[in-house]
Amino acid sequence: PAGPPNAKAKATMTSSSEALLSQELFDETVLENEECFDLSPDDALLETIDQFRQQLGSSSSSPSVQNSVTPSPTSVANSSTAATAAAAAEATSRDDHVPPPPPAALSHLILSHPNSPEGKRDRSNRNHFQNCLTLLDECVDTDGTVKNLYNAAADSNSASGSSEKVLEALVEIGRRCRLGDCNEENSHGGGSEKNDKDSNPNNDANKSSNMNTLPYLAVFQRTSSIYTLMSFLSVLDPTKCAAETTTVSKENKNPTRLQILIATAHTLSSILSSNTTNNLTREDEKCAILRAELRDSFVPALGRLVCLMGGVVKTVISVQREQDATAAADALLVPLCCDLLQLGINATRGCEVAKVAFVQSALPSELVNALCNTPNATKRGGVAVLVACLSLKTSDDPSSSTTNNTQLLTEACQLLATLCRYDDFRDPSTTTSGAMGATGVTTSSAHDHAMEFHRAGAASLLIRIARGVLSKLEKKSLVEEERHLNSLVVAKERLSAAVLTALRVLAINDEIIQTMVALGMLPIVTQALQLGVTVTEPKNGVNARKQRLSAASLGLLRNLCGNDEIKTNLCLGSTKDHHS
Image (spheres, rainbow, N blue to C red):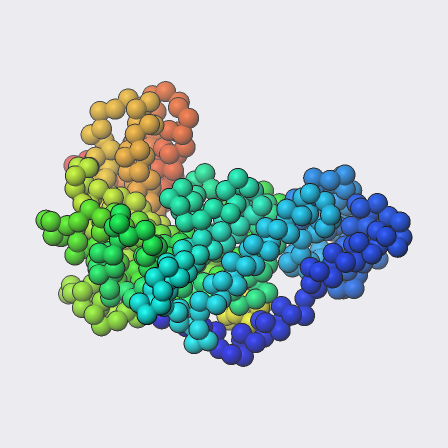
């Protein structure tokens, strides 16, 4: 389980934060330069930025470097200095011999004029953000445990207010780290249903660029606030998930531990998520560096995350196995499991140490006995939890308790693929704010992880999922327009691509490939490829989904062709009549 950082590490982070240039000093200097040297607001701002960059040692004799700062948040970019900054940035990009300034030199500051409308707004947002972090810090004891937000001895109103404020703070922090100063109409929303939906990092509508998020992410790099959020993962005992679902009802309007845990998972995903798009801007690159460092700092919390996943999956299996399973429990636990799986993806992507920590995490004996009761059970906690997720079944019947499992299986397949793929290309000799990071990592664990999942029976479960979901897609008698609008079909197409990608990363040697072929892999991948390339009329979104399915099918075929016999079978077209 994740605990708080040791006293030495936390003191180091705090002292580092205290040594930074304060926002107050920066604002005072801007106003002083404007008054003493009779400068315009824009000139005073640029003069102050240049002055502090020289004092911090992040400039050179080249004017292009002195003026190459990218002001953040938006105010300077929206002012008349935007052209100057753009020209300076372009000049810097042309000079290959001038080293770029440190990515976080002034990134923790609001580089806008304190008296401008944008500057006032940005500082108000930052103050609110800092107040939210302070509120969460006050809820965590020195040993890393979260104080009881539902103390029966305390006044019920104050207890309710405390839990509601915590939920509002988590939502606000997650929004700022995802959207920065955008989405102002909902900037100070609380724990309403709409805000909870908006704060979900899985929402495609909320996957925006890193514009204006850099100052908020820099706060976590310079302070110990990331450890506070890690401590909030312990707000729920993994072995008591079933009992916690009984406290959720329409009459109980107070946020429960489950709801606070969901908000914590959303917030951490917003902080740790990586930008997988191409053509990153300079701002995006800085954010990527900060998020990578924060993922390194999050590694100690992966043990707690695996335990939470195990407790939730155990409860989901138990609830769905009973005929009289309550819809309320299933409606809460399945989305929570999806959120935790998504957090696992964001926390391990691009961080080799995190992948190893997740796979090798240990589970409590109670969860081990519940999840690892098969002959080929694994002792690896991360492997056992994902294999248990893959054992869940799906149904198209809306009245069935397993209808919501499609999204859960998709997230589980994506996490398995992340754990079995090497994508940490950082320099192993570099350090990241004292965290483990990529330091000392010289080999990939992808092969070992793939073997662990294979020995635990993941391949057979994945093939069962692939066979079931592809057969349902093939039987759908819907025209292309209706398929595009049918959310159930879209979810199954996403699951098809995810499960084929997971099978691809497992197909690493001849033994595993032969096992897959014996289980009927070739007819399945051929069927998937046919579904992916069959297009009647080009429709928005349909071709993109089919391309993902085709790409996953071709990637799996490429790995399967490591066996010469399979190459022959594919060329002869014998896959419809034989399973080998």
